[in-house]
Image (cartoon, rainbow, N blue to C red; front, top):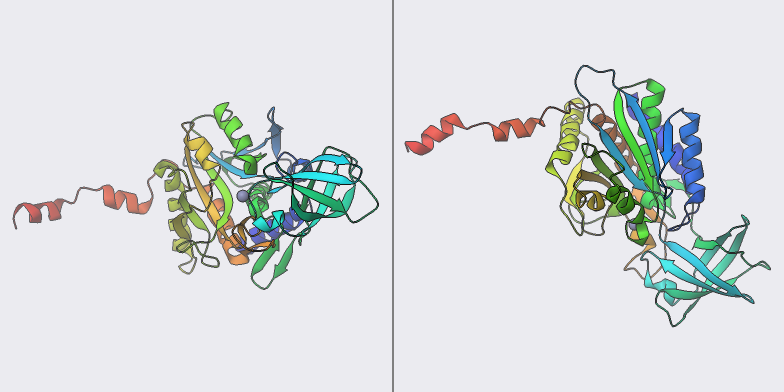
Length: 367
Ligand SMILES: [Zn+2]
């Protein structure tokens, strides 16, 4: 069954991605793995000046016009840039927001350095005088060689009951969803006109996406779909399905772009009435759709409801993030369906609402 095949692909990719540590500006390991997966399935890709990856899948063998879509997800996760190492005194800077306990408690870390060393370390619970800077000590007889970064020492990937528990669901889940759809389409030789964008330094302020959107790297007719995890909120809840994201903390997204998702949702519901898909304005954070919207693109997003967002932002301790496996599956189905909807048609509800209510108009004129 199609259903299970793409979920299997998605989980396998997610497990592999989970092993690759990344922080803003330090996405090399994730990037290498993504390119390996693309190579394996003969999916073409290029990189822009900044190291954002742009993969393309084009198979236009379909009667109706299929949408030109770009999936956007980011390769980084909140983490620590090592600024200096002097006589075992290590200073790191937290990039991306997380639990404040990183500044006050001893938190287990793994440092990754330019020699490829992984060094067990911990934050000391003390801050320097500069904002977001902390002291770190190694728990091994090794010191890192710069450039280096550190990540939280948390599970890379665990599938427990319904939960997918990871150090960095955000946004490896988005990367895996995007890759799984491409891999599935390529294996099955299905129609599609898709670009999958894997960006850098999102947690440092949408840096990769802003550069790409400013440079107009994608043609303006491309419909952008940001694929993200987002802090679960009422109306965008864990275990109740992927979320069609009406907006984020800063902007509302595009109706024209969202119409594709709504169309795909209607198609899925026709096949299976039990499928759950939510729709909500997820204002727990900003996503990359905003960078594209503000640069003139039609952009929308899907979000996977996330627990322990940013490893516990606003919470007392640092923890692994998790999403629900059914939500992940639902998101994969929704994205897959989106790649083949009729781009020239409105979603079913739109034609109903747009039609002129002739009879009712008469009734209003002649009460
Ligand atoms: Zn994030």
